[in-house]
Length: 378
Image 1 (cartoon, helix red, strand yellow):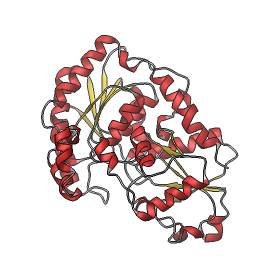
Image 2 (tube, rainbow, N blue to C red; image 1 turned 90 degrees about the vertical axis):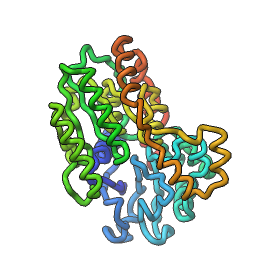
Image 3 (tube, one colour; image 1 turned 180 degrees about the horizontal axis):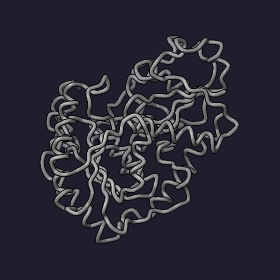
Image 4 (tube, rainbow, N blue to C red; image 1 turned 120 degrees about the horizontal axis):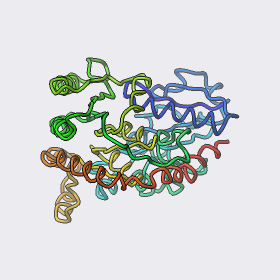
């Protein structure tokens, strides 16, 4: 029996990761009996310690789990780690680095308890799986040397493995996914407006991966900006869909010719099915997947510390002040919509040539990273 720590709430991306990981395990390791436990809560609040220790392994998979407060902030596990006897495996998790560049990677430090957990995993398992190369570099910088780029479990749609990207013949149906960060909504409105103008005859569906109605998972400010974008979309004759919680809600993606937008797992869904997508990255999570899969996209944010002079300056400023200075001017206010439309025009003219080889890249990451992670489970 293997304990799989599940972390789904409302964001459909989390449900996609969970479903894909379950299917990968069932397909490639049918010998494993999966026992799902809520990763948001301490294990010993849900199961007896004897039950936990009867497992062959505890598995943490996917999502932005490599946070500075990984344990016990993200995964509370149990107060005394020494009480857990089974090995803990980590596969396909990511870090959200800010700023999303070498300076951000350099100063990304796990807290003491999180580093202790990572060191234990490093010493007791063949390797830790990272979602992208940015995350891999973060772990290497922290002294965790046995790291392998497995990619996110959501990259791997079993039926699409071994298949290659097929460019769309025409763009009749487009899905636009909305941002996660509220600061990106004015930018998103400009992108959507330009998309409507560039494809006036196309059906455009605006997909809200966390919904837009009031809930415990959206702050009042998030509800306000999401509803405003929903109103704007409907005024522009776009369809609006709440795609949170239930994976069946995104089944219509199969009928879409193109994805444009901000949701990393909207982009990943299309990439995993070898379909066309242009991601607008909000942070290192988006930048990481664009780099790893080597597909075209647009950065929706500035990379301020790429300037050597600014780098020298901010090294002298405390981190909390640096963060405020960078975040204040992080979102690109102009030009993103133009870049996205130019990119789309180039791809349509070239037959989406920059997506050539996408299937082979995903297959290679699977064979070299995710599959060994699955097969190395005890």
